[in-house]
Image (cartoon, rainbow, N blue to C red; front, side, top):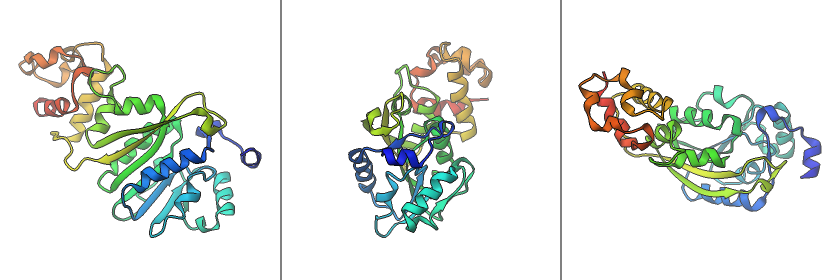
Length: 256
């Protein structure tokens, strides 16, 4: 890995940390293989720690998206079969990479991991599964349930549409250079029956407004979204972090 570090410049602005632990790579790949897929997108292959195994999976149409031109050049040189499979651009700006259902995998840049998930949320009709590495703090926030102090906007909006599984933690020593935070791998599977909301726009507005003033009771935090009569309901005595995903969804039907 030291040779690799000399060959490639790490870019802090892109949140780059090379995954070097082969055992961790194997656990991620094994988690991926637990479910069948025909089309696979890797986000941010970097130096190819996962890529070298992904391109060997038979019967799968594989693509990778990488914004860093230097890493793209390195990957094409190291793995010639990637020549027509790398999309050199910002994932947040790209169109759907496949027609029909596809799976996503990646050791995501931690500085944009939440943005990546919200883009995937827009694609959820086609995304059959996502397995990703996240900063542990973000991972815990995503999978937390009501009543937990880290339960928030990300938790509610993602859990409304995905089943989320916290698979395992990853030591900082699995990377070069070691990040200053611990990491964790999560699996997302779209719900066969998402929560029933009046409109997604109203659901997003309600959740974001409620958590924007999370220390206040719901009645004070979201009073602009409901009539005075509706606000008399005892549910509004609670704070945002005390409501389940289902309760937020149900409240959209009572909004102005």
